[in-house]
Length: 305
Image (spheres, rainbow, N blue to C red):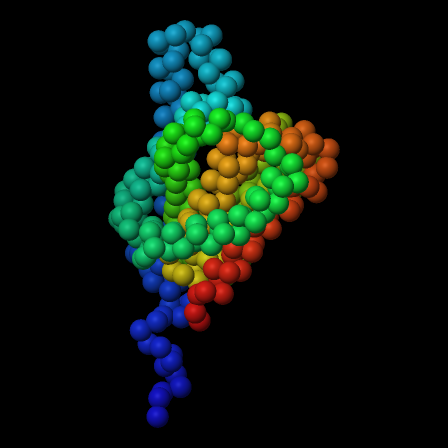
């Protein structure tokens, strides 16, 4: 007779085993004091890259040109500025890898977990499938208007996908990789290793000057996304599903149908509803969580144990 203490499918670890394996590399050097300088390395990497960009423009074209470029980056309404914004996520990605190596003696693979690319493809595919009828409905109801010409959009699409892939991978490796793992190595409760990174993720999306009264609801949606992504990471034992869902979600929001008045530089179409409209009716940002919640439920259902 089978041993009831053993799982029915020994070759398929359950959720707790997958999470334990994912967190295991962080247990070799789990001291919390290491996490703080690690995060400072990430911040310093991004600050250095941004400073070099602004300083280079200043040196080549003068302070006025540097100020103009900074103002354009803030709205990212052209392809060049939007691609620059996405490219600025590469240095913090490198910063996370450097921090993990220097302070915890572990490499990139330990931050990613197993099956990253197959799981990312699955996560992106499911999320895009969820978005497809919603986008068709928005276009059918004339809730969008043209932005970039189709030819320019298509020519830029490979760079757009690459840029969004880097941006979303940076955020996933930082929040659901590095921070989640290091906290889970010290604390068993998901109220610590899942909620704290999600709350930080939400706060970093807080934009009162740009979103007005909708800033906090938008941050709450971002925090909810962080919780969903943490759940997928814990259940699958890797970043693939969360990264794929994040990639597809952001591709839709930055490349297919961006919010008018937001980051529209690479978008084929923009919404007829602007960020100012959202500020007047903050509750209207909440339905934006529906697609990734549906995708999460489908992906979660696909995970055994």
